Image (tube, rainbow, N blue to C red; front, side, top):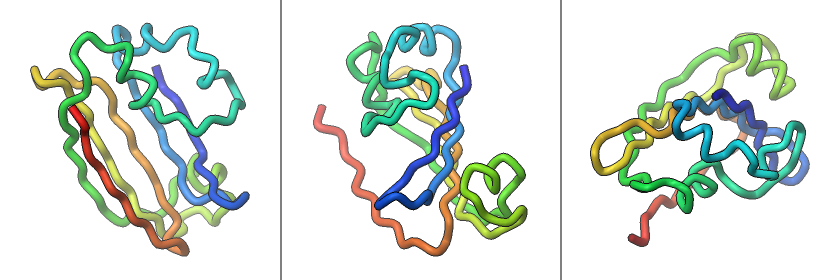
Length: 121
């Protein structure tokens, strides 16, 4: 399953995220209203998965690089083709190192970003 998401803040688009889920994981989200086409939600896919997975997400590997916006990203973020973006790839896995979600995000550099990540379990 592939999901394409545009993230906004204050009405401005600042991030495009493409998420891939393996079939067994995607099937857990088949009837989730937050994922309805064109819907808006404050929920994250990881948050939606957390209560449905037998073995929850335990860790993520992230790589970050600069990349010119490809066509689908420039269209989603309303920027020029090739516009600089900050690309972050995250692979979420369970405690058995089974991949549960791959998320590729492109952030516009006109914004500043601060992230605080933690697990409470």
